[in-house]
Picture 1: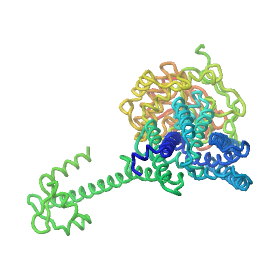
Picture 2: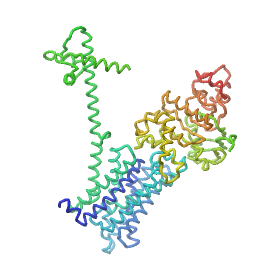
Picture 3: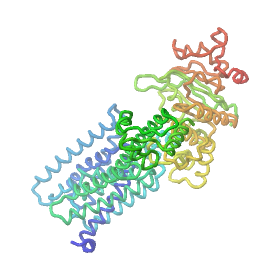
Picture 4: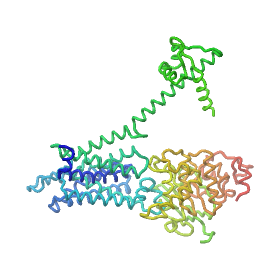
Length: 369
Length: 267
């Protein structure tokens, strides 16, 4: 299918818009989770949502996404409050508490789901799509719901921007100024729950946490400002969401959640390797250049010292001599020659030039200063 | 409020972490307008005392008043410098942004900092000599620069009482002098400054009031009266860090080397 056709196609347009909306929301909100070093929180919330989906279906008999979404939100929220409670009132640390809640809720959700599937009623079919997500099932109505809830989450974030920043950077200082950091925490978590549950139908509970963590991790590579990071993470989330959702609905038997996550993974790897300043590749080049410069300087210093031992005459020194002083000198000599700091006498003998001497003296002067 | 109301009044304060008392039945009165050091060995409860004043830890018993009233009613009058290590300095934010956080309390919920807050923050940065770093990312700062940024954030709170947790930790001698002169400037402006301090030698040089603490209150008062070997021995057990003492009288005030003339005129 050609690209223009893609977006005139009703299903695809729906899927793309839905994925963009949920990706933007989870990416932006995920930044706060990542900055608070609570990356696992998204995982706990989304897994904890599963029993909520199953219970909502059992209680109402409805499979309407909005009903299931409310169940998911309630369960996800309950799960997080439980984590805060466990951390606050026992010696269990946060990571363990998250792990406990995640496993218990998810396990309970799977039990319910299995039981529901054995019910003698055809209506139950399809709940299991919430495990890995299925973009093709998105309807126009679902997309509107995702967009409205996502916009509400983003608006709340804009309103509570400085409170969220305090919570992420220095909660104790925030508390000293009279902000109830517990309340801010509950608010941020609630918004995060919202951002996560709107993605469950498309991405699924198992991989939704990637939508929270990965865009933020990628965005952090590109900027040193929180505002830009949140916007960029939203953009990355949308990009991966659209790419993954379109790929999976144009290809048969390709589950949406994993496809979106693969697109995100590509973004993360690209950012880790190539982002300016923080990118691994640039760091590698920087290290190499620095090492190289140090080697070149060392050989120049050797030549300088040797010239000092033979004052008043230009005297060549063999590569072999220089190699014993500094292994690998052969390569550095070519560099020195290209800069005009050393010259080849005859054969394999080298000497420092006047420019080289003044360079070395300048460098030594700089060290002493 | 009269100047005779103490800046801080602590009555029978006891704080415990689980079954271990961190502060035991502490009474303290910090007069308005002093520059006070809190000294004591590790685990003496120095930070906990500051956090109790700020309402950040819940006491098992006792009461704290700030300028005569509970802290919750007096927040606007108090500024706080937490320990430098308490935050993540790789956080994606700028120096100016961190300083502006000091205005968040006055702004209250939802309201965003604007031009006025930015100007106040720049002025505070100038006061600590960090104005050229306003747009820097905070991870690019040295320890001393981080400490000065935290100090600027407290200055921008425009308070009457400043509580600082180890503001000299990890700073070089020049930065330490710069910070001290800011603190002395605050005292001259009539503010009260309380500092958790580690370097006993500089206590007489920098401060005019001191609290010696080791879970219990050992002594508190003017440096010239209570900062002596006897009290230090009580606070630190046998392990009193090396200090110069004039004469052999254990109750004689201790003086920092090179600061004899200066501290002699004070108190």
